Image (cartoon, helix red, strand yellow):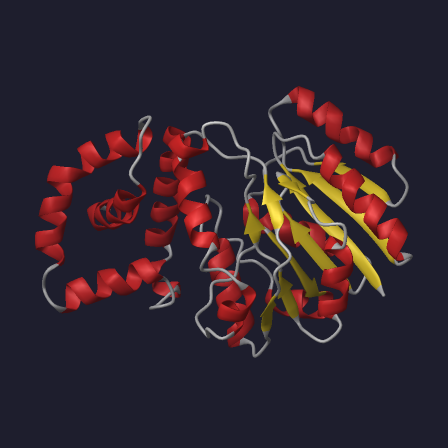
Length: 292
């Protein structure tokens, strides 16, 4: 078997991630390559660190002069890949399982797309005060492979996945998504619409870059603006949109929006503060979306 490992990078040192993947790939005795594409990073220090990847056997480092964005950079990497199986992962991941690559290679033999999921470090400093950490760790409990494989509406996550190159070439990421958010959700939808199957396994990559509360809230707001811009593409395939459509159908969206205008500021202050309430986060997303 063969594997192209494709990593878009932006202002993040992914040399340790590449070394871990390289060691596992060598031990598998497969044909492989690792390609890191730096999407016009503005941090010169991380760019210099990542440039060392290009000196490793089987590895390429490509520095782009202009920022492509999360969708286009993945399509660019796929065009550069030479093997039949493509592994995409975010640059801020960490390999924590000794058989991480072998589990993916075994699963992709019989499937079109394989997702392994995401996990978070258990020893993170101040984790009890971090909104993203609390929110996503709570979500992890709902993302076990057996539940996801039984759910036809299970959400595709692009943090780390393997896909047959012929399948990717038939779908690709929608490059009209130039801002942050939801390009992966649409990609997963289109995979299913084309008749391909997404198979989930319990083989997560660890997320090492947990943003501060204000940054996470700002990124969430940007993602919601992206969703609003492309709303017609998603139908009822996003939980938030299903809620919004129900409110509009029952004629209650206006009332909820009025309450949202009154509460949104105080909720945002809580979410960005030192003791954020995860229970308020979904309410904030609804209120923010209705305000757009």
